[in-house]
Structures are given as C-alpha cells and as structure tokens.
Length: 139
Image (cartoon, rainbow, N blue to C red; front, side):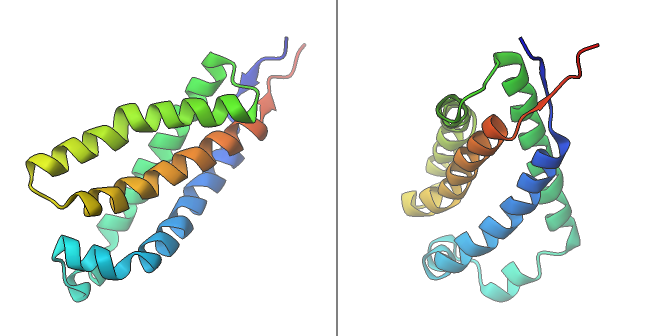
C-alpha cells in the first residue's frame, strides 16, 4: 500500500483559497454581519496587519492538522475526506463557536455567518486534501 504524506502545495493553496473565500463570504454577508456584530465598517476595515497575520497562521495550522490526520487515517476518497472534515469542523469548531457565542449573548445568525464560513472551508479542505494526494517514494 502506498504511504501518503502531507502535500505542502495543497496545504498552502488552501490557505490562500481561504483568504479569498472569506473575502467573498463576508462581502455576501456584509450587511447582516455588520448589523448583528454591531461593528462599524471603519473599525472592521482597520483591523491591522496583525489580524491578517493571525488568520494566515491559524489557517495554516488548521489545514496542516487536517492534512496530517488524513495521512494517519488513510483518507483516500472524496467522500471520506468531506466526512472527516465535517466531523472535525462540527466537533471542534462549529459547535464550540456557537456555544461560546450563546454565552456571550451574540445573535445566533451572527454565529451561523462566522461558523458557516469555516464549515464551507472545511468541506473544501476535505475534498482537496483527499483528492490531491502525495505519496512517499518507495525505495
């Protein structure tokens, strides 16, 4: 059996993709997000370089973590990739974000906008990492 290894090109492609997806996501949901979060757009647009650096680093950690898990779990099909990515997202991100937001009295719709962005990203990540495989060269 072939041994899969982390495909660094796939990981970094997904990191860049997430930045683009998020721009599109929050463009589509800009009006309800601004109203629900009570953040004015001037403040949101002046988040600073550190905010974008944190997003890049955290996205890379997320995708690398999923990629490593996929190699250990022997994920070789798109269905398995999507299933496990959804499982990781719902268990470790989606539900905890919604729970924290509820205790902070944030509107449920705001939680769905924010967590939904990651839910879609995890599905795409599972699909890409399961199909764009790299294998260890056998000696």
